[in-house]
Length: 442
Image (cartoon, rainbow, N blue to C red):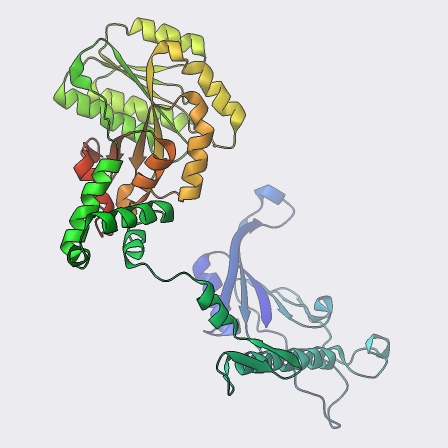
């Protein structure tokens, strides 16, 4: 492979230079802008392109050929507006650089190498490298041949033989014998993202409750599992209509799950259904964009936005807005593994403040990580869970799996970025239908 570096005043002339020097099959490896000359940073910027093109493998030397590893390469035709550096992979790279400029030309010697650089046997480095490459190919062919023999049955189909290796039972047959028989009901539930333990329990319950005829009817079976999930799931959105004084709600969770956008959806939902008596508070001072985003939402909905940095400031903000019916609190995203930051958040959301804490989870997160997030945030006193990004999932069994694991009811789910349209008001039946539906997004 030949690798060359071209310099030009712009991308168009640089690409033209690459095509002229290396042809249409050249591969662009990287591009960057550099400043050359005595002025350093104040010098004129130059666009640098690193390109490469495949070259044939060096041929084996014959008696008629000289003992050089590379024949001298003719100097590249200099370009009008540019400079190129050419190197061929193999051997000593420093000896194979060719610098082409419009002003001066330095061409490397591709002629015969000194005898001191040759191997004691007289072989060139290229021949030795080719020999190693051939040995590697032969090794790969040998391994492939042995694997093919393993997969070929002999007289006893349960036994595989390999020359030089003691005969042993067919591994695939042994694994199949160890695997439990397939359960169609379990496989049916696993296809919806329901975990194995829950699927086993639900399939056993179906066999106890339904007849053989009903088990063979897909519609009856689907309706049965819908009712079963409704019995297992717990849905508990905030009761804003109760009017039992001021309601305080905080969204907490890991980074990137959409807490700020969800908070705006809750505010817009409350404005459209109940009243304008709302205050927004953010303690997400780690991300400037989050504060500005919430302020924009506040301006659009004509709602006050408070930015607090310390727990005392949060207490004062709650006192200032004691006349509001709803206080929505946005928090900074915390890594589940950052226990210090989670402990710091606990100093803000103290139990005596009566804040309803919703753990915001992304439906796109792997379940093993969802369980870890719940475990690490449970020290804050989680009251409910809220799932976002359900429109980005092909199955939603995690809604059931997480609730069985955590025991916390589900308050809301969101299925997009629109405010407030993509905040779904859910019921048990709605959640069951979401879980037992085949979809590519909602």
